[in-house]
Image 1: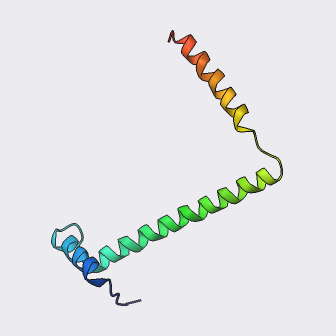
Image 2: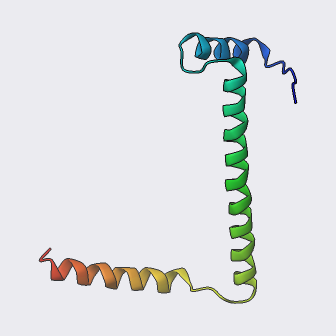
Image 3: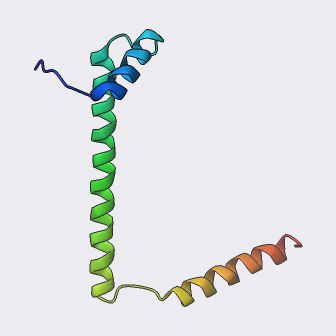
Length: 87
């Protein structure tokens, strides 16, 4: 699917500079890489949205541990490690 994209002066210059530097072989290669990176970011954002939704559902259902309890457990764990290592 061939298409054209008007990137504006700044981005067109940047793409041209990337090709001239030899980093990429063509404008199309730069744009494919850009779209691939956007796709990757969108997948990560979708996964984050899902994790947030799951966390909120857990909180609504009462499946959470209060931060004070977590902090106490971590403090005890690392205090023991420090004592065992002689710190």
